[in-house]
Amino acid sequence: MTKILIRGAKVLGGEQQDVLIDGETVREVGTGLNAEGATVVEAEGRILLPGLVDLHTHLREPGREDSETVLTGTRAAAAGGYTAVHAMANTFPVADTAGVVEQVWRLGKESGYCDVQPVGAVTVGLEGKQLAELGAMAESAAAVRVFSDDGKCVDDAVIMRRALEYVKAFDGVVAQHAQEPRLTEGAQMNEGLVSGELGLCGWPAVAEESIIARDLLLAAHVGSRVHICHLSTAGSVELVRWAKSKGWNVTAEVTPHHLLLTDELVRSYNPVYKVNPPLRTEADVTALREALADGTIDCVATDHAPHPHEDKDCEWAAAAMGMIGLETALSVVQHTMVDTGLLDWAGVADRMSFRPAVIGRLHGHGRPIAAGEPANLTLVDPQYRGVVNPAGFASRSRNTPYEGLELPGRVTATFLRGKATVMDGKLA
Image 1 (cartoon, rainbow, N blue to C red):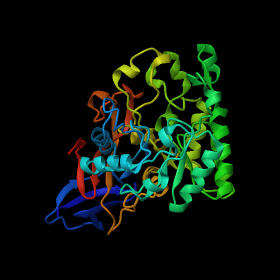
Image 2 (cartoon, rainbow, N blue to C red):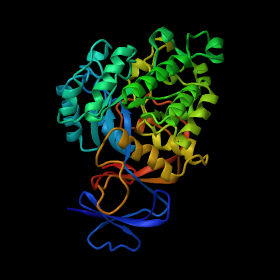
Image 3 (cartoon, helix red, strand yellow):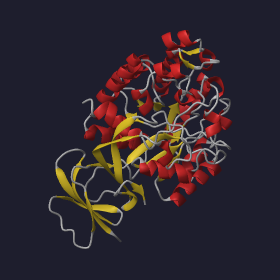
Image 4 (cartoon, one colour):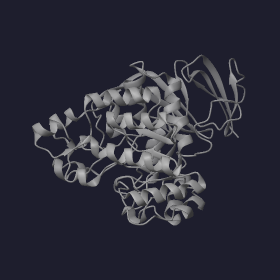
């Protein structure tokens, strides 16, 4: 068993402390700890956070290994400070059976860079017609607790109700991709002033908000948990805020790109900005930031969506939707939330580790930095500033909207159960 002493880090952005890791757990937290027999990591000026947890990652394996694999995706996650990710179900074949989710789970175990918790499909083949094997996936070795047809909306109200009822038996949650399909037929970007000027078919906010409103009512009716994926509009924020005020069991996530980017960028017709849900207006961005700050939005989730070069380097209408985000998420959150004074680092730990781990019922992650807790930790240099260069990414894909943008913060070390997966800013 190895010992590592992280010396002089600001735990959750507070006072400087030493953290002694002994094997897979934190042995002691304090000042002036004995470094005898330990590898010392000098961390003065650095922020120590619990390992980040992502509720929404597309690892693409099985079936689309040309864009990402579990290995490359978890390496990207570790580089971004993550110790656990939830792998979405829209693979080929779809993760709608115990066999497929166990395959993804085992691939994660073999990678060794972060834990992979599969998300099970709500419906067979993501087709929205028949419930998938929810119970079998929950009872599998993968112990699935989050179910989503992400990429597609569970638009049938009866199917959604049955799914919400079913997951109650094992404390599961249905994570909804809120997109009313009839209202978004042929949609290319956010419906608004910019779409009108560009002549692109608009994607109205009400397409998201109408599904959210329905599902909040359904979840309250059956007494179940519902989670809203990649919430993107000011109206959606108000709906979730209203539901929470009534004590309903709803949680929601926002992506880093919806905290920073707006539909004005689509004027370039650069397909890197094409994403689902689409980039919205500055007013929406402001509402999302405020909602994350006050806790209406529970967590930040990357919606890391890798694509091969040929699926993005084409005309706008033909381009795939999605952006990668695991390696830049923390920097974007620092830029939009910490450096603006909306969140402190303890708040970042809450929104990017504690809460997503609770929502996903993920044990061993999102824990306090304290003696006896698993040593899943992330060390951040908040003073660093650098220009985003995707050529150095660990992800297999390069479809980042931040290329050439200067962002703050850098993950200098990541520890998964006491093992360094990143050290000195490089993958171990």
